[in-house]
Length: 347
Image 1 (cartoon, rainbow, N blue to C red):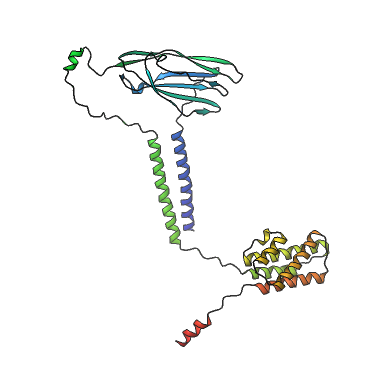
Image 2: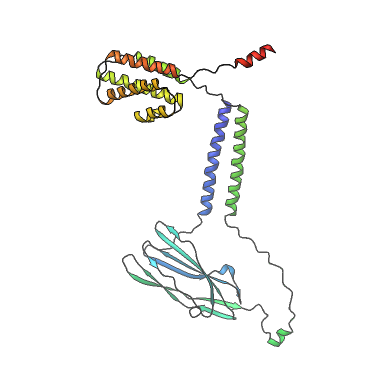
């Protein structure tokens, strides 16, 4: 009883740990902010500079984020950016993020990387974002202009001649930036849960090994089951056509069950033709036994499906033939090796 309770407790702990792990990973992945759409809005767009990477110098990558939120059925076209529409900034790459869906509504985020090669203030002018509704209504959203200041890494107020004599310093060592590991705490929690699961599994296996091997189930010989069932059929009080049909149904099922247990064939799932053919091709029965079983199965089908009513003597003969078939094909116990026994006795 104590071993059962311990195993049950370990099983419950395993299930609980798996549930906690799934909840932790789900909570870590569900970091998306809700949509900012107002009830009366069908679409909203925002173009902004990622200020987390500023200030910007000549040659730096300038990340610009375009976020579009739209209702279901709204299609839109992203604006195109080139040097003529970016105020002199160069578009290096354009990366479309995976769309996020919220009950049919969508949020599409696109990341642009610009670069500038001159000092000054650059302005990406206002652009239009055209869209179309599910009823073919058209419209456009005007994106607000954004400005970016580019500065030089050189000191201010120094002429070109002075720069030639400027004392160039050595390369500075890399800055120790604080790492930003997304989902680090969730993966740490997941690793802890995996270790906990491994520990519980090891304890469970250890408890099973200590309890010793399970007792082997002794399988009862097939002919014991069949003979016991035949005795039960003989003791049944069945009269009339319905009783005859029940008698032959029980008798045919008994021989099918015996053949399935004896020769490991799926006799209970086969048709009569398949059942007889499997016993013929498998060489389990001799010709006399095959003929006896074939005659009984045909008579049984006539009783069950054609309302044939054999006499009591015929029914008794069928029962006797099936019992003789079981006795003739039953599995005999293994005989001891008499030769080895005699040798041991002589020694």
